Amino acid sequence: MRDFKELVDAAKGMKKSTIAVAQAADGTVLDAVEHGRKEGIVEPILVGKKEEIERAASDSGISLSPYEIVEPGDGVSVARTAVRLVTEGKADLLMKGLIATGELLKEVLNKENGLNLGKTLSHVAVFSHKDYERFIFVTDAGLNIAPDLLQKKDIVQNAIDMAASLGVENPVAAIVCAVEVVNPAMPATLDAAALVKMNERGAIKGGRVEGPLALDNAVSVEAAKHKKIESPLAGRADILVAPDIEAGNVLYKSLIFFGRAKVAGLIVGARVPVVLTSRADSAESKLYSLALGVLHSS
Image: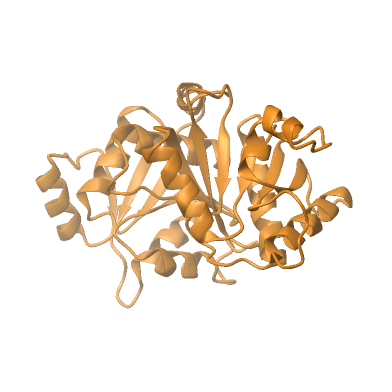
C-alpha cells in the first residue's frame, strides 16, 4: 500500500471488525466511530454509562439506533468491561474513548485477561506524504518516555510487524539519532548499534535495522552518499525509530503541522491493537486510524 485510500479500500474489502469503545461518552469519539461505521469498516460497541453516551450523542447529532451499548456492572471499570468484550470474543479490537490512556492500558496488560503478550506496548504512527511513494512509520511518539534497550527492541519489532501487516516487504527500520556514528557520550547511538546486532542475530525479525542514522541519512539516499555512509539501507527507511518520546513527538507533530502529512496511529504490542484519536485529528485521520486497526488486527 502506498497511501491511505488504498488502506481504507483494503479495510472495506475485509470482514467488518467489531470494536469495543472504552468510555464512549464523548462527541469526538462518537464522531470517529460513526464515520467508520458508515464506511462499513467497523461495528462499534459503546462501553460506558448509557445516559452519558446518549447525552454526548445527542449533542453531536448522532443517532444511537444502530449501536449496542454495554454498561459496566457494579464495581467493574469501563476499561475492564471493554477488554472483557475482546477476551470473550465479542470484539476484535479496542478504542480509547474518554478515559485515561494509562487506565485502559493497565487493564490491557493485566496478565489474567489474555491480552498481555509480555511485550512492551508502543505507539506506531503511519504517515502519508505527497513527496513519498510509500508510507513512513514513526515510533514511539506517544507512549514510552525513555525506553531502555530491551524496550527499544520490542518497539522496533512492533513497528516492523505493523509495516508487514500493510504489505511492506522486509521493511527497513532506521534507529534515528543526532549523528550517524557510535559515540560513547551519546547513549542512543550505543543502543542503535546494539539493535542492529540484535537484528543480525535474529532477535528482531521480519525486517532490517540500520543505525545510528541522522534523520537526513535515514530518508535521503543522496544525503547518505554525501556523508559517505556505506550501507545499502541508508536513506531507504520505512520506519523511523526515535530515541525517546520527546524526539518522537517533535518529529510526529512536525510532519503534521509543517509537512502537512496525513497520519493514522495505533498502540500495539498486545493481542489486539488499541485505536486512539485526538480532538485535533481530522475526520479523515480518524477514519484512517480505524482502518489501520482493522488491518493490523486481522
